[in-house]
View (cartoon, rainbow, N blue to C red):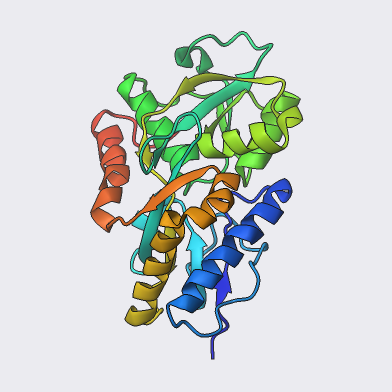
Length: 270
């Protein structure tokens, strides 16, 4: 039998671990109230933000919206989308901030031409897809950057821009907000140069292998968690205002951005 796992890999700075654990504890109580026997007792903190696949044992996780449309097609069921109380977010939406060092000479996005750009992952919506549509709408042509360096994570992109190794990066605004909350010293030498268009927020998901009745139970538990006043302190600890039910069509904007960028002559971030 496949072992079930639960994780929150998108926003999991080490300093946030107690709050993520509290969130899963509260959600587990609601899941159990739905008659779901033996949900995972603990969160997994080893799952990467962009794993190779959403495995059959994934009971609960949070996954970037771009790979949902590409490498994870057919592997998941949506449970809900959070609304974050973080600058740059709207109702079930987020965006990316383009960051540079405070002491850099960059004043506009166009000034980044020929710069060294930090990319967390080629499968990232906030790191790749959103800056791509932003630049495409500025009518740039490739190559725009001098180089695009894949760093493996937003955390590493922030570190390398702050250190001066790389010039700029596109960082999920929620990630940037959590850095401001939990480790502001790591971004004290950075500033926001610009903002990308908004995009659907990073959703909570389960594996497509999860039985339909369990998917319904998970979704009901998640939405009840969001609406129960007793759980508000847990949600506020993660800057979550509410969680709403969504369907896959809501995430169509992400791929529409990809098509628009191609139509505008900038199909690849470069």
